[in-house]
Image (tube, rainbow, N blue to C red; front, side):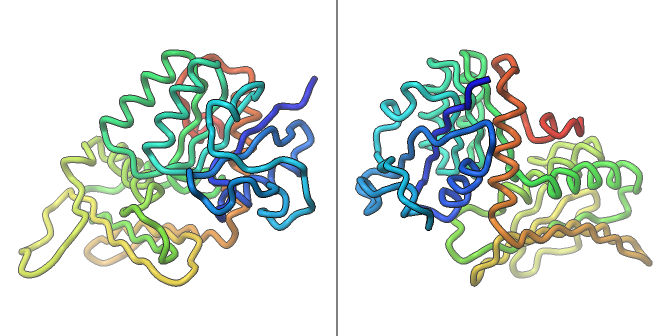
Length: 270
């Protein structure tokens, strides 16, 4: 079987570099093209050198449509607006679109669903790692078992450069907890507390966001009861784990029909 031709977004960023390295190690994939935001200083530079590897004779561009010509899949850790446009192009070409982007609005989520119906094979997750998705499954099960007198709090910390909060992973875990409790997260989430706020409302799911330094990603889900506490935690130590998850998602999706999938589908956790 021929190798899958992969396009990488955000080529000059930390996740871009991790994804480039992961593709070069994959036996059934080759790098096809790399793109970055317009006016990026990386435009025109060699993709290998930007990722800390040997030259690959592939230069970084900013034309997504051109980059997708002849490609089989795109691994996309960018920003919501860019991911939506890529999803539309992927739908036209029937490509695999693996999305690690977070911070989508409800309207943008709807656009992704439309792109999936129109021909794209999208695998989207707030976190591509095996560990986090197993954690989400455990959170759902724990929330289902424990009564509502166990309060649920989600604490996350990331590096100082992260632009969205709560993180996509924190929201993924929140959705897992809400599913276990059979409640709507949008109606029961508490994402900020300040001043005299009164007692904690029973049945809500709280979020606490920390930012600083170079933390790759740490998430804890706390189930706090009257006389005991259960904490489920995941700590990412290297961005390579997210890239490896993206590679796994591409391989899984290559023989799937158009649609919108998650890492839970890839890992058969549903």
